[in-house]
Image 1 (cartoon, rainbow, N blue to C red):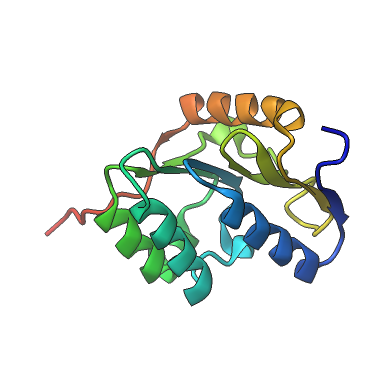
Image 2 (cartoon, rainbow, N blue to C red):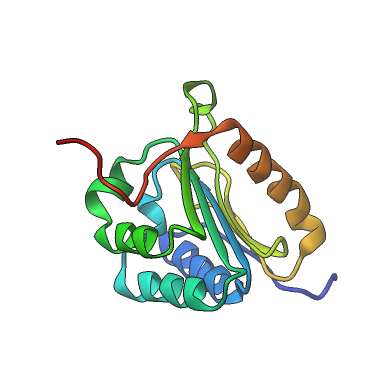
Length: 161
């Protein structure tokens, strides 16, 4: 659809607005690939509440995250960890193997139709695509390949003594 929204961004503020737009667009599936999810600021109360509402929206909802480093999630994101525990049936986290940790882009995809893509995790330059399934297709395929290559990461249960 040539008239569907496409927006380039190059600031932190514009990136944050793009994240909110893509979160709002999600109706069934959210897929996230990021180095450590820190810059997504998913732990903010409003975003965590939006994710909770999304996951509570029905049994067909899912959130999958692939990250290189899970430390920020497990140590500094109690709201997300609580959601992981509550919605473990539809919220999963995986960690990339060492061989893939050189990948430096980051993206969030919604319903195989919308997404926010950062070209390099060290910069806030990227694009937001809303209702552009043809352009999201390759990113979704990339996410699925990353998901298949990655190993289970953070879990809602604590192990140990």
